[in-house]
Image (cartoon, rainbow, N blue to C red):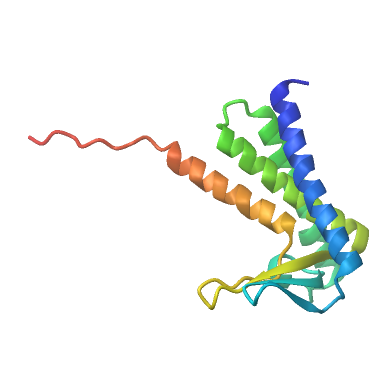
Length: 167
C-alpha cells in the first residue's frame, strides 16, 4: 500500500472515529429530547434519533423504500466514491481530502443505520435567524466539509480567462 492510500484511509477512519465517539458521548450523557445551551441559543446540544435522511427526510417512508434509499443505495455510492478516490491518481489534494471526508461521514452514518436503525443527531446552530440549521452530527459536518472542499477545488482548478485582444 502506498503513502497516498494510507493517508486516504487514515482520513476516512478519522472521520468515522470522530463521529462515533461524539455520538457515543451524546448517547451516554445527553437526555434524549433535551436541549443544552453550549453557547447560548446559538449552539445547542441535543440527543435526537433520526430514522430518515438529512433533516429527517424519508423518516415516514415504508421499510422497503428506507432499505433501498437509506442503506443499499448509499452503500453503492460510498463504494464508488472510495474506489474513485483510491484509484484516480490525478485528483488534486483538496478533492482527495473532500472525497475522503464524504466517504468517512457517509460510512459513519451508515454504520449507525445498520447498528441502531437510526442516526444520532445532536448539534443545532441558530445565529439569530441569519443561519439556522436542522439538528445534525459530526458525520454530516464531514460530508458538508467534503462538499465545500470539492466545490473549492473545482473553482481553483478552472483555467483563468484572459482578455482576448480586440480588433
